Amino acid sequence: MTERQIRKQYNEIMKAYRAAGLSVVGDVLMLVRIDQIEQKLHEKAEHLCNYQVDEKWYDRLDSLTARYVAEIEDYLPKLKGMIYVNRDPRGAALKITPYIDTDDHDTRHGCDPNPVHQKMIREMGFATDWGGYGMLAPQYNRSDR
Image 1 (cartoon, helix red, strand yellow):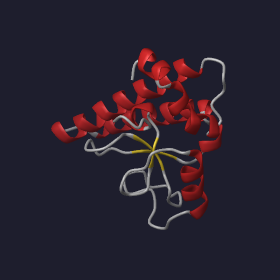
Image 2 (image 1 turned 60 degrees about the vertical axis):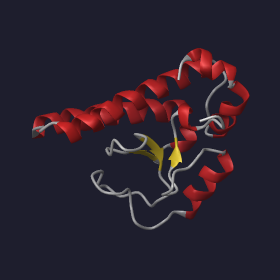
Image 3 (image 1 turned 45 degrees about the vertical axis):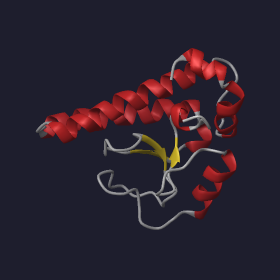
Image 4 (image 1 turned 60 degrees about the horizontal axis):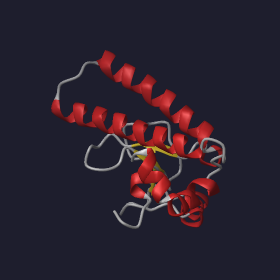
C-alpha cells in the first residue's frame, strides 16, 4: 500500500496495529515499510518456486528474513515471537502465527494451536486467513479488499 492509501483508511487500518504496539510517531511510514517488506518477501517466495536455488541463496534468505522480522518486531513489540514468514507465494508472506512456536522454519510454524496467540490475533483485530494466521501487511487489513 502507498502512504496515501494508508492515510485514506487510517482509522480502519490503525486499530490492529495500535493494539500490537505501533507507536504514534511515524506510524504511517512504518506501515509503508511493513508493506515493502511483505512485497520483498513475497518476491523471494516466488523466486523459490520459479528457480533452482542453492544452499547459499537459502542462507542469504534466512539472514534477510531474520533482519526483516527483527525490524517488524521493533515496530510491533507485542508481536515479538509471533511473526511467521510464509514462503508459499500463494498467500501473504508476513503472518502472525496462532500456533506454538517451533525451531523449524521450513514447516508449518507448529501443529498445536496456541490459545494465547489466537486470542491476541482476534482481540487486536487483524484479518485472518483460512488457517487462522493473522495477516500482518496493511493491504490485508482493510474492509474494501
